[in-house]
Image (cartoon, rainbow, N blue to C red; front, top):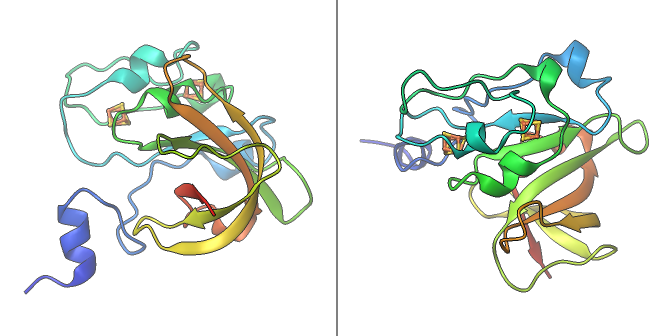
Amino acid sequence: MMNDNEKLFNSGILTEEKQEAVLPPMDLWEKKKNGLVVIECPQQIPCNPCHDSCPTGAIMAFENIIDIPRIDYEKCTGCGRCVARCPGLACFVVDLTWGEENEALMKLPHEMLPLPRAGDEVACLNRMGEEVHRGKVINVTEPWKDCTRVVHVSVPKDMIMKIRAVKVV
Ligand code: SF4
Ligand code: SF4
């Protein structure tokens, strides 16, 4: 019988035990201003807007539409366009150079109303939609002017692999 985590993974939601995130190499990640993309897309699905939306070619061309994204981190500028364009809300940017020593800036997709505003305190949610932290919104951008926002929120560095969404409180 499947446990809760296995059910969630099979439903397409990653879990603490089965993160399977494609993570940047730490030596580059720690020094890259504006952050680097983190992609959590382990299932072979026919989808490639992450590649199409990337202005630098950091998300490499797909040989097959069901390929899992491959990333050239040297080319990633942390712009967040893929964050706004991914229909699976599976792209994030994490800037480890931002803020104080123990802080990071996360750029998270946001398609819910009400919209957060810069300066707001928001609930930071894990993959299960549970609140795990309260963070401060630093900026809200709309890279494609199509209503999908990217919320920039300050979080403790040790929570970057837990927080995956925000909610206005
Ligand atoms: S953050 Fe920008 S540069 Fe980096 S992978 Fe996404 S779209 Fe490409
Ligand atoms: S756009 Fe999102 S869901 Fe589609 S392949 Fe890229 S990361 Fe996966």
